[in-house]
Amino acid sequence: MSDRLLIIEDNVQNFYMMRFLLEKNGFTVIGAENGREGIAAALSRRPRAILLDIQLPEMDGYAVAAELKKHPELAEVPIIAVTSYAMVGDRERILAAGATGYIEKPINPDTFVAEIIQYLPKDQDDNQEKRP
Image (cartoon, rainbow, N blue to C red):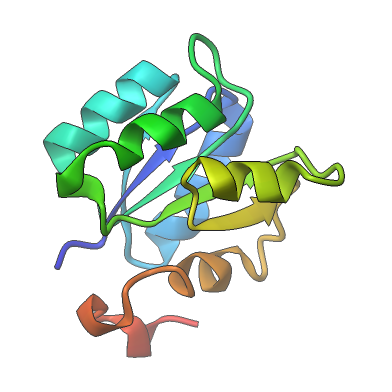
């Protein structure tokens, strides 16, 4: 199974930090700057997991998560919301829209990769032992 992850994030600094941490730990990162590009990339590239910002241009993360879940070929792909939305009810709302997990921004560089790994299907993680 590929260690390819898709990050749907419009903030260049946030994308760079996540990509740097993930690539440093052996993942291949695909990027998309908005929801429509992210959906297209998910369908064509079949990532192992999708990291999804909520505040996106064109389509917000709630709509993107709901759209991704409509595609049977992506049914097993975890969607992890990585967002600054941290008010009461935000976590529940994104999980109800189809996200598998939720990580608050700003991310913690010391724990971020381990947080992502916990959402990956365990039976397909050939490299799990190598990672934190």
